[in-house]
Image 1 (tube, helix red, strand yellow):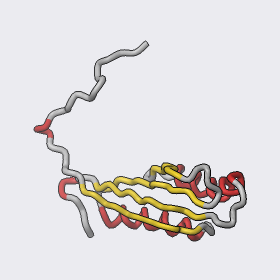
Image 2 (image 1 turned 120 degrees about the horizontal axis):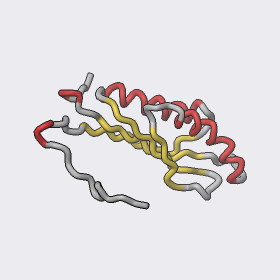
Image 3 (image 1 turned 60 degrees about the vertical axis):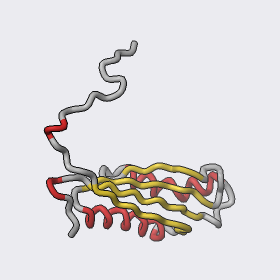
Image 4 (image 1 turned 30 degrees about the vertical axis):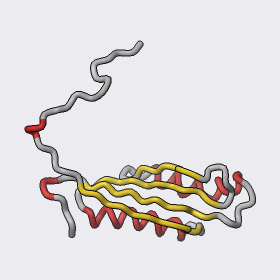
Length: 122
């Protein structure tokens, strides 16, 4: 088990190129992809972005991101999402999974001021 010390987070990003070569239109492609995207967006541990291929009927590129204190659990969540694509009847044309450990918080660093902090808008 790979756990960051002190509860430091791991960030995982899964990039997928999903193929729908049998879809003949964007409407047909959306009908295939929407149920899976909707299911993922309902899961609080995942964030999903559609990156490319939105105007192509035969492919689309997605990124799924998640954060966890346990790298093995994080990897399992993202690999399960990749497996769901195939189980949903879609094709994975390319996939890349990256995990990165972040440094733990140090209270001595204080709280940095965010850009635009204190500014008010009307």
